[in-house]
Amino acid sequence: MTYQLRHRGPDGFGYHRDAEAGLVMGHARLSIIDLETGDQPLFAPDGTLVLTVNGEFYDYKRIRTELKLEGFQFQTKSDSEIALPLYRKYGLDFVDHLRGEFAMALFDARQQQLILIRDRFGVKPLFYHIGQSGLYYGSEIKALFAHPQIPRAFSKPGLLHQLMQTMKPGDTAFEGVYALKPGHMLVVSKNKNGFEVQERKYWDMDFPKDADRDDSQPAEYHIRQVQESLTEAVAQRLEADVPVGCYLSGGIDSCSMLGLASSIQQSPVKAFTISFDDDAYDESSIAREMAAAAEADHEEINLSANELYGQNYIRTMYHAERTFYNTLGVAKWCMSKRVNECGYRVVVTGEGSDELFGGYPAFKMDMFRHTDADDHIKTLGESNKLFKGAMLAESVVAHPALDAVCGFTPAWIQPWMQTLDMARPLLRDELLRELRDYDPVEAIAQSFAPDQLDGRHPLDKAQYTWIKTMLECQILNWGGDRVDMAHSMESRPAFLDHRVAEVARVIPPALRIKGNTEKWVLREAMRHLLPETLYKREKFAFMAPPGHTSQQKQQAFQLLINRFLDSRRVTNAGIFDPQRLRIFLEEYRRDRDPVSLVRKDALLNHIIGLHIMQEQFVEASERELTVV
Image 1 (cartoon, rainbow, N blue to C red):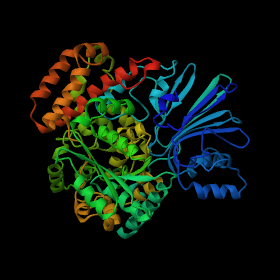
Image 2: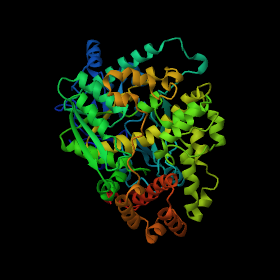
Image 3: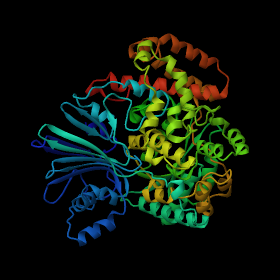
Image 4: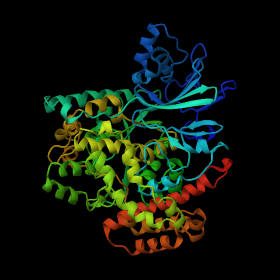
């Protein structure tokens, strides 16, 4: 199981076995802080606490010093070790004192408890399976599948969620395999009948109710708060015993990260940029302008169909363990590979900015619709026409379950509801009958905590529902940790520092999106670090050119279709009806409507992805879990 995670931790394996407790813990280490003595598992001085951590705790030097002054002992210089005395001091509330991106397992021998914890936004992954023989957990699903006690099969509801891009929080594509939810812990306690499992929420993105919101502070106050919290968050994420670089696109988010990092760090920051062979999707010119302004050591990775499809596509699927609608994930996989080749193990990234500060076009759509800004809606549709069919619906659709919990159907999920309508009829008849009464949109709606939606502004509701779904299962998965750690490279999204989040959530909606300007407060906060072009530019979604956009990509896409969607493979997988799928493929080849093609491109990526994962995970033996 640990060997399956060797890409996450190539620097050594560590284990702890406790036969009496029925416990085994494993760790694959990526050395970033305390390169000499930070091997895991880590133990309390009396041996009654055992800890393994994937990720980073920030501000650990201050915390360690304060704990030493109180008499606690340390055996390493590792940031991870602070969790042991904090737990001893505060019990389960110790997680409130941790700042960072992490997934951890802590065993308390005195209480006979195993505690699994995931960071507040789900930057780091953590999966588990509960069966008759015990509880199993790991940073990736492939580690679980290496154990012979864990069945490997798709979850039938999970198939629908994969096809519509949007997962139900806590679920995965696989039967009996669950994701520990962000901001949650799983407390596993031994008793006379075996063990008891309790899931506890310790943090949430708690937007204030409209009635409780303090709008008395001027805009300058919020701008200053963002500047201070982001500067501190970036400074914390530059802390490492290895070099730290930056991802750089042409957006405000990553440009802000590079601007702050360049100001804080004495030496030039190494910046890495993806460029595409399609001018409509390529932002590298703005990235070059920003890199020059920040005097960064800039490296550009040029990607075409040769890099975005073929074996790289298949390898990305293996690491993501879920399907993706766009080859952006493959592009990020290629970039992390290059970062590793340049000798870097850590980068600061811009993920989370749109979620916190109101950046996505769909958020603007909801804001405009609820403020009767019809002129802005028309302008938004024109400026984002490239993304209709994936990030924006071409027409308004609604669902009663979402209307019931939100008061409306958020714009971000509407294109995926339309994709689901296209995907469902392609399933084989037996699967259709089994899923007849399952509504994935209703399941997603019912997963949201009502107390986090009641009385909130529509923009808060749109951001919250996206954060609980797409941020964790898309942005931080095949757009983040999973493709970065594929090459032993840790990404640190400073925007997702929980103290930055606490500043962002109290910004009035009318300042987050001011008039037609998204992320207005962030723009003003970072104004003097950004090129003028970027400061004035509307949000442009970072997306790879879809498969239909050039003949070269069409040909590369077709090779994947030929390999994974031939009639024999489709029949054996038993997910889709071969005849209906063949008709869909014929219609796709004849289609010339750009919105329809964007949607079909997305769906086709999901369909191919399911057949790749079928071969990689479901059909492979425990010893054969590998890239196809």
